[in-house]
Amino acid sequence: MWDVVNGSEATQPEAEDVHGTLRKWKIRTGKAMFVLKTTVEEDVLEHIRDAKTPKEAWDTFAKLFSKKNDTKLQLLENELLLVAQRDMTIAQYFHKVKSLCREISELDPEAPIGDTRMKRIIIYGLKLEFRSFVAAIQGWQTQPSLVEFENLLAGQEALAKQM
Image (cartoon, rainbow, N blue to C red):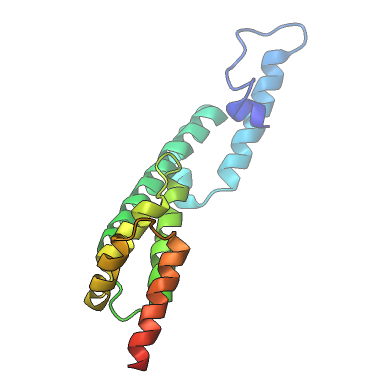
């Protein structure tokens, strides 16, 4: 039934022909509307109750859910801007930042968050005790990868615990 929702049969044929094209289209669109209206929750159904065609209903869903994705994206970006290590270990902190970045990148594939930006975000939220160590690393001619950076910081964290 996808053809009547968003494919080659999404628009109504002009007039009835010998093959009963218009009648067949109306039957298929009726079935598609039935499926759409019986498989969604009541609160979502309200948005498509007056839709005339499956395409119109589907387009309404697309707009509705893309708004929710925009809202979720905004919430995730806000959380990323506020993330700080606080009482997390280096491993926990890196995992938190990477998870947020992955979710944001999935919701907005046009603007994925790369390793360089992720490192800047991580550095910004690190505990103060790691700042001088990070400054030393930033002076290196060849910068470590994100994984190497995490390992270096985890090593520093382990040293600090031993002392």
